[in-house]
Image (cartoon, rainbow, N blue to C red; front, side, top):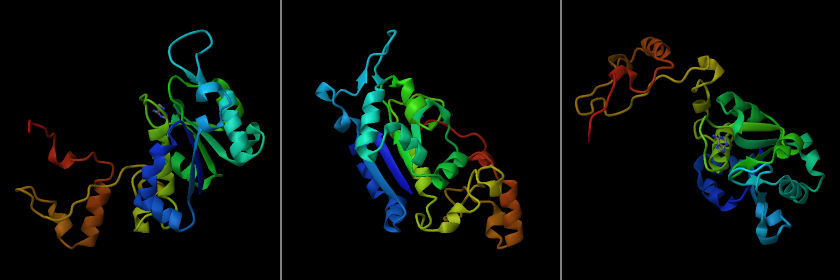
Length: 234
Ligand code: ADE
């Protein structure tokens, strides 16, 4: 899987090099990530990459000519041709909702180019001329697309064979078709008794059939649903 990120803050992504499953995926030779700064590709003075919106209004808008030049320098072809070879995904609250199904789709598709914006967002011609997709990680506005891009990279890269220590983790996990789009059942581990709070007896029974039935019955339950509402001051 090849993932390129265009951002004003490529250095923010440095920590991702240390994330275990990305390291695993990279070591298997199946993941290559590259991070590019728009500023390294602008010809405008002072490293300018954005401008005031036509028609007035607050904030600044990422310029289409800056993104186009960055594409042409990195990919060596007309900027409008890039999306013929790659999924060019704009991270924006206006995009389609990022779900596990979208992660699967992007992971299985052509190489990815993720575009992070700041400020008011992107000149609309970035969407219409350069991008092939737009994704939002949720109905809230972040200060930029970098954290959404990290979420996309994480969710896609963990699907690369060898990325996860235990490949079975990918089977029957939350939101997968195997679970009918539901979230996983609750998990418990030692200690069996924590300050008087036990675990469901069936999980300690050694009866695999009963355990499977309990897990099936508890798919899609909210965390702590067994315990009822919690709270209280520290
Ligand atoms: N940029 C700012 N907020 C965002 C969001 N919720 N999803 C994707 N990109 C964003």
